[in-house]
Image (tube, rainbow, N blue to C red; front, side):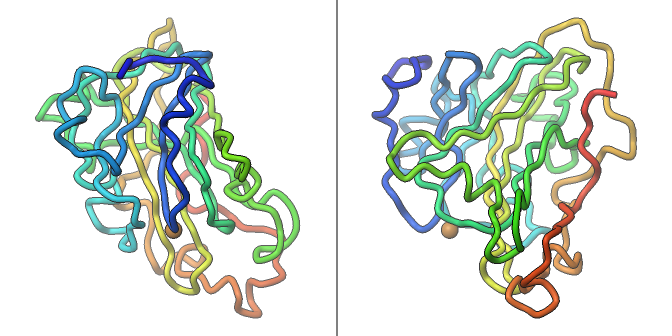
Length: 253
Ligand SMILES: [Cu+2]
């Protein structure tokens, strides 16, 4: 299978609807990078020269925010290749038939301080920073519109989530981590994280300051009111604001 193909030629990567899911593909401009597929064998994917995704074995959620699987899912071992991208360019994560409706989505990056495939780089101890997050767009917590609901397309077309690499970010190898947090079950949040390797180019010189950094695991805990949440409770049901936990988004300042 070609590593790169163009938007509609890749419909072959359709993932039929199931109760859970994750990132299927990534696009930068008109270039499409296939992601890891838990529906195909690891042998057909791990170690292949095209693999830009850290492998994730199953579409099931992660329930424990302190689990090492929170970092880059499981097994989350290094990819073989990386997506080339310029600082300031957009990257889109593509999902199919995403079906949960409530909760935020957060895009994170972390410098690999060298090759992301190096055995000495530990993603669970990396300094992660947010490059974008999208939560409750309108209405109330339970009945309103969240981004993870709005971006769904039940015609079978790609569900597209786009973020921008901060334009002054220092070039180098980075992980990008797309995370959907689903909050539809009371007091049992679900995480759906996947990581890909990026090779960022450009002339930027900036890196995020301390207040923008967090560890994964570490950024989330069940004692955070927005995480250990019963959205159906009187306290939350009709609220029209939801603050996404974790550090503020770094926009390159
Ligand atoms: Cu699910």
